[in-house]
Structures are given as C-alpha cells and as structure tokens.
Image (tube, rainbow, N blue to C red; front, side, top):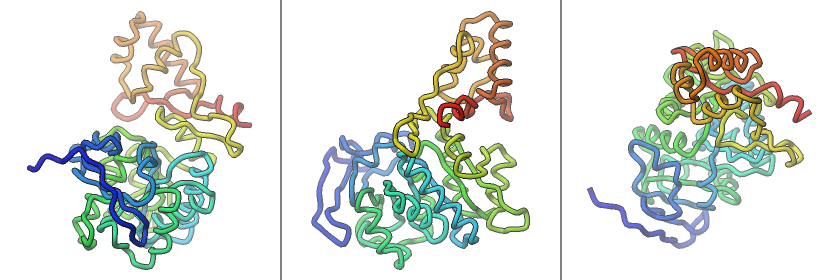
Length: 318
C-alpha cells in the first residue's frame, strides 16, 4: 500500500468551486474518520472542509420514500439545523435529498457524501441541490474525479456517512435498504441509532421497524428527535433562539451523578459501573435504580444501561 502524503491541496475551480484534497495525515482530515476500520486514504472536498470536523447527525432512508416519509425527513433536517447541528446524508433520491433540503430551508449546514467523483453528481437531477449544499456546507467523496457511481461505491460511501456522524436517524428503510449498511457501521462505532416507525404493511418501513424491534431509539416527532439526541455527549443542541444549550444537562446529584458521568462514554453493565465507581455494591445498585426510575438511564437488551434524555430537559426548554 502506498502511504498517504501528509498534504492538503486545493484544486482549480469547477461547478462546485475550489476542490480541496485531504490526505489521511493532513491536519484538516476529519478526526472522526480515523475511527473507521478502513478510513478513506484521500478525500476530495467541495465547500468547507472545516464543517467536516463538527459532529453531525445522519438522516438517511429509502430512495422510493412515501410522501409522509419525505415530509418527515425534510422536517428532521430543518429541526436539526435549527438546533445548530450539521445534517449528513448521501444526496440520494427520497429521504436523503429531503433531509438536505430541510436543513437548507432552515438556514443550516449540511454535508453530502458522494458515491462519485467530486466533479460528478448522482442522481444528475440533484445538481442544483448539490450546489446549494456546498454554499455553506460541504460535499465530500473518497473517489477521484471522473469516477462513475458504481454499485459497490454506495456501501463505501455509507461508512463515511456514519464516520462523520454522532448519531444516525433512519426515517424509512426497506428490509434490504442500503441505509442498513450505514446503521451497521454506526453500531460498530458505538453511535446512537434512531428510527421513525412506519405502518407494518409499508415496504419502505420494514427495515426501520426492524431496527426499532432490535433496540433502536424511537422517534415520534421533531420534539422527540431533539430529546432523544440530548443524551449524545458529543452533541450540544440549542433551542430555536440559540440560547439554551439543551445538550448540557446538569448531572443528577450525589452518587447518581457519579454513575451518570460514567455512562457518558457509552452503555455499560451494572457490574462494570459498580467496579468503576468504587461505591459499595448496594449503594451503587440503589443509585442505578433511582436513575432508571427517574428517567435518566434505561436498561437495554444485553443488560447494559445507557443514558436517556431526562425529563429535566422539558422544564429547561419550556
């Protein structure tokens, strides 16, 4: 393998403006992508490469989306953008495109991860949308200029979508949807996965409903989306006026707070939390029980506790 050069290059202007080439060791290469088992050795970026350093929220789903699914994706993009978050998606037809559009309409920032070279647009009818994305956000790809959208490029693109994100939101996905590839990468990275429920007879919802069955966090609307994301330690959410840092929730008091802070790194078992806290077993288990009853944590399949969006958020944001 050829070792990547630690350089950052700017290319000439094209339809999307100047193109920046980021090699693996470049200072501007997104730190989050180093977590991937196979990070892209080179990235081509149109727009702001600085945006790629901010943890985003991926909004993904079916290309052949239902009308309600398209509306939900557009609303999700707008809600996330108004909360100050970067919306990450893949520019595909359906859910992806609506998420980008929602973020743009709300005056926010969005990132399109491409399965083509940076000089191409797929699907071609999204060229104007891509130009809008790049204006304040970015388009990024690991594929060299002139690379066509071959089928095996899309799973490779999906790992970058997960890599740039702190959480993944699935609006609609069929049982064999490519969005599920993104989810698998997200789970490997320990990210939160959220999903919208859909009618059991809708083929576009079969995959997303299965995610909910298997433990994904359910999203029932825009307020619910932000409440669910508030448990992600990497994200700082702002209210509609940009004043209240909803993601910075005060820790619960005393021993409950000690255990709450230990869960900032991700889910953990009761035994591990007791050992890490240094508390007597009985007191630690009592504190865990209180945290669960008051809605600060939840017990997930496999016996692991994880943070939830505590009810204190509602009083803070109201």
